[in-house]
Image 1 (tube, one colour):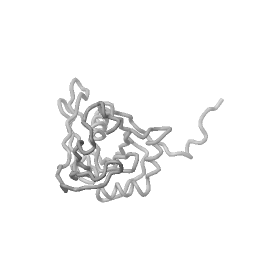
Image 2 (tube, one colour; image 1 turned 90 degrees about the vertical axis):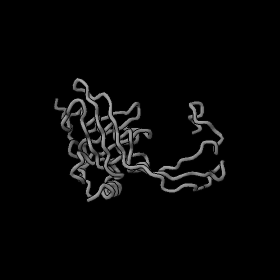
Image 3 (cartoon, one colour; image 1 turned 135 degrees about the vertical axis):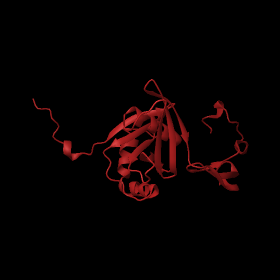
Image 4 (cartoon, rainbow, N blue to C red; image 1 turned 180 degrees about the vertical axis):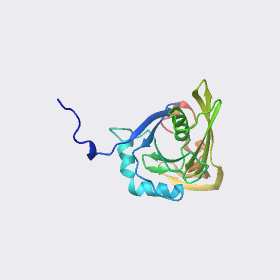
Length: 202
């Protein structure tokens, strides 16, 4: 009986590697992507969002994934110093930077033999929309055991801003950049302490 699938060429195939960083999941897309065009990583991000977003939703959401994971697309870098270009795919789209995703991807490409492995440290450099990300993967007895990440420069963009949050009124915050923009808020404004008991409220 010939059980060879007859629909093989009707579908796109992607090779992925599932990894995690201390429990934070990352699905790394190794192959199957079309050419992601752009002369900068921001242009590649925009191209992916406009032409390849079906790949994100197919590999990220159920039944193949879930809302709490991350996908990382390996693409051609735009700088000679970079080993790979990376696009970080989340539930809402493509983000500029993800620390746990970068660490998981660096260790994964080293363990998968996709680059030269040197002991005690293998250096991996990523081109990301946020900028160049440098990671040292620490090797012991031929195996990756930990990694150190040097992110893009972090800076305070605006301080003393405010917004209205439903149920809490006017909230003061500072706008910071550390690969992506984020708001730093004093938890006292929400009447809570930062501890494990309030994890669901946070």
